[in-house]
Amino acid sequence: MKKFVSVFLCFIILFGFSACTEEARPDMTALSERLALINEYYAFDYFDAVIYDGAYHVYFSLCSENDVLLSLHTDEAGNIDDVTITAVAEKMKTDGERNAYMNFSSAVIDSFTSLSEKDVKEKEKSLSYRKPGLYFSDLYETYSALRYNFVFSSNSEYISLYCEYTEIMEVTDKQ
Image: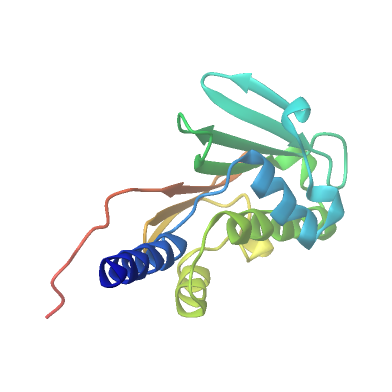
């Protein structure tokens, strides 16, 4: 009987460790807490969010009133499926305003994803959201890493960084 209990406890411990390594998507509270660690002004709560068209929308005033919009879709359990950070050209005229968007969007993506350093470097090479000088030009860039898909799009009126978590990992045969 002691051997059975010992083996049973070993399996529970092993399964416990494997559950800890599973990718965990944050809910709104966890995302806000992670953002607050980066910059206290990035924190938000449910009362700041407006629900429209099945998504939570939170306006941030980084340099002027309501200059950046954070949109979040969640699953039934409240985990975030995707984030979108949008800004309008009228509110992002100066280098300081564009840098504020860049810093905020970087903080959101870093808080939402769990990418390795290598994947972060590849993402930053592939997407121009960390290059404010290119904002509001015609861009449509995509990148995928692990379970995340990214789209950075820009035109003369808007800039938008979108990141989604996918349950299905795409497997490719590199030869």
